[in-house]
Amino acid sequence: MLMIRAIIRPEKSSKVLTALFEAGYPAVTKIPVVGRGKQRGIKIGEITYDELPKEMLIVVVNDEDKDYVIKTIMDTAVTSPKGAFGDGKIFVTQVEEAYTISRGSKEL
Image (tube, rainbow, N blue to C red; front, side, top):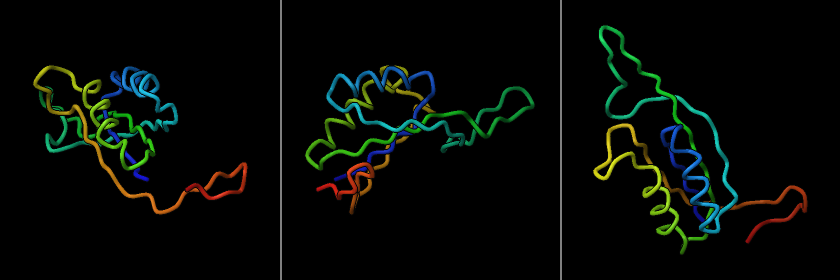
């Protein structure tokens, strides 16, 4: 299993969640986060905003579903045909174990 964490613009969150649901991946955790990427925030006049609001979406999928889920997120989170700074980042990590609390069982 793999954990996919996507940090995206808040205004794209609903669109990405809908796309994942329609693609068969309804189990998603959404967390509001703040931060900055390589662009080091936004400067407007004399003020620099270096803690920009984002949403982090977390979904755990089987290894063979990784590319499809990533493509779904990328296609719906991008803000223009060529993309733009601040559109986000996707991280993929291996999940060693998972447990369902209500059943007290380990996932396979």
